[in-house]
Length: 109
Image (cartoon, rainbow, N blue to C red; front, side):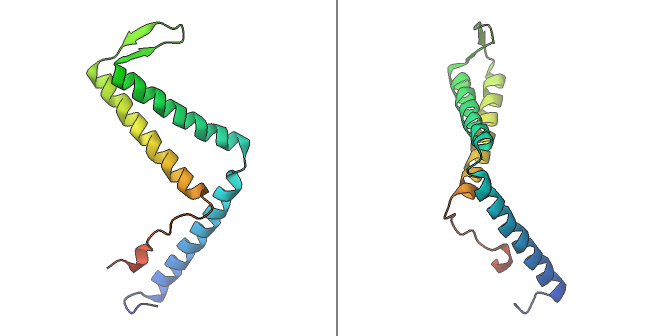
């Protein structure tokens, strides 16, 4: 145990590590769940659709009618797409069989 960590702080760190380990196991179980995989695929699709609409400056309603997008709406769609991409990337890292070792926050200076 590092010198500057109290027993109480170490207990909290140990609890966080146990929670993170349990969460990793849960993600691995989800990796085989068809409904979850469908949700992940839909998030990717929605991101691609939002990016295309924003770049093209047009979207289509459920009737197939073209809607011209304002620059503000295009910018919002790009932001939504970026947020979805970050979420998908996070979930895919958690689903990886050999996830990259992330730095332990307790070891930072």
